[in-house]
Length: 52
Image (cartoon, rainbow, N blue to C red; front, side, top):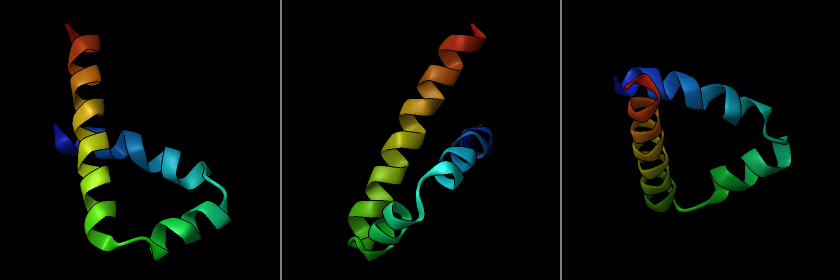
């Protein structure tokens, strides 16, 4: 389930400009990790709604 959402997120991360990706890497790891978890959680909810 989580893996499916992660596969959905990965292409979005790849299409982002490199400068933005660099900025994300410079961010605090904890807050970055928290944002990632929240975005995956939101995507999983949307994914469940689409399936039903």
